[in-house]
Amino acid sequence: MDIIKVKNLTKSYAGHRALNNLSLNIKKGDFFGLLGPNGAGKTTFVRCLLDILPFEHGSIFIEEVPHKKPQSRAALAYLPEKFSFYPNYSVYQTLHFFAGTKIENKKEIPLQIEMSLEKMGIQDLSSKKIKHLSKGQLQRVGLAQMLVGRPHILILDEPFSGLDPLLIKEMKDLLKELKNEGKTIIVNSHILSEVEIICDSLAIIDKGKLLAHKRMNELDISLEDFFCQTIENQRGPR
Image (cartoon, rainbow, N blue to C red; front, top):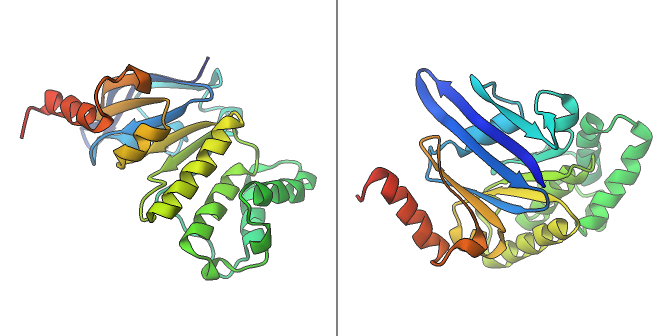
């Protein structure tokens, strides 16, 4: 079943097409890699999904619901590459702030915060201030704030950026656990070696166009080679 359906998506900035008639579907429960060079249109695509950016043409359906309807966006949670929280807030206060923007029934907020803390293994950090957290702890808080509101689709922009190998493994393990619980996870990353390991499917875009849309098990060469060949076939060799 396709949980996200995008058809003929077109978005322009000052006459430049950031997305050019882009169509792709993402299956429910997939770990999906959104790949492309810098300036390919990946961030624009995500912002259109989140209804942050309007677009001129095309359609987006999330769980069969048009993306303009609030119930479709309730299924989504997003973690940008460079995120920040109020440094003097505690972890609990941070999660409470985000929960208040997502959860209508305020009586559910404490329970959902506790569930998110437990899921990320950071119950002991609940009263600690954000400014005193390590990079790995901050990444866990970032994931925890995504989980309040019980979204079905998690979108992460460069989740491995700036992490050392131990923290990359920790992040992958956390994301795999969430996928095994039925979440659909969309990752925008330049670290192809990690995408190759964790993703079920991928799309490569460049200059706003879809160049490839594959299941990982369909590739008969490394993802790095496939990515480079796909881009070079579109642009021509350097």
